[in-house]
Length: 331
Image (cartoon, rainbow, N blue to C red; front, side, top):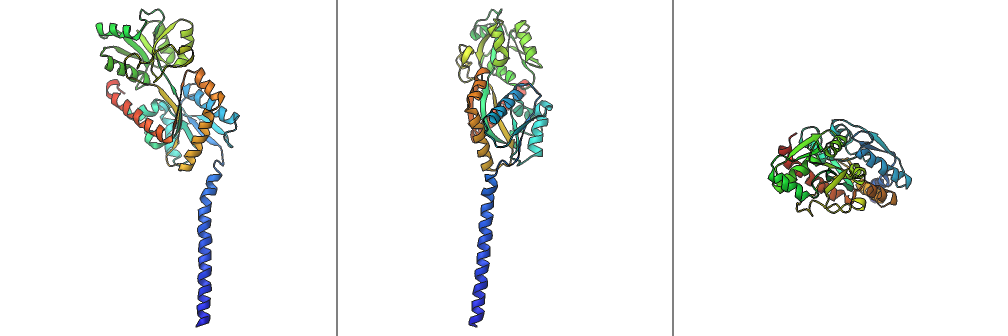
């Protein structure tokens, strides 16, 4: 009886030891796997064509990361244009759910596409990693225009309903949102004339085919410096620095409107908190480099760092704002 008891005790001890080893092994695997991230190259999807604002933003950012050796693995940039960005974003969100090696960027159509029925995915289908900067808009008139201030322009618009017109991007764009917000808050009745791209908007403003229009600082700066365009307001929270520092904000002009394009990084949904933290840190380090700060300053952007949680909330706010004006602007 004592012998049986002794053998039973030995068996139980062995089983306990085996269970302990297996259990400890299981716990050790997860941190070890995380410690090895990243183990392969990242793929960065730009859902627009080469040479545009999103493409330049991403290629500059990934070059800064490579030059400063901030990632042990390369970030391969791939353009997947089409459908106002929906093709590229659908590829990331639907085909790579939970994949921490798949990344993308955002633009205004990231929010407007699903609202207007042009995209099957929305901001809710992504992990928001980090926002890095804000690309503002300028409200501009031709240098030959009689309007020296926004107040003068709006006073004329109120006195002459629908005689004043504005040029901007087509669809549910940042330009259109700014225009309709300004019209609503000022009480002036004006016309919005949509164009296919910045070049057409530039021509319309400079040729005074429209009374005023909207362009990004990087698009308009050369013409402002050449004395062919005059900026009456900027759409950011605070003034743009550098050569455009004398341009007042819409808020300074009496209108609580802040409207600019947030540029940042997103990934598919389903990423672990550890993966998100790694990516946050990598891109935040890139944003702190002199090369990146120069790019932001040279393109009259506003450095605005928002980590994952804050960036997610910002996307909710942006989507709600665009949805508010969907019926006014149309699809």
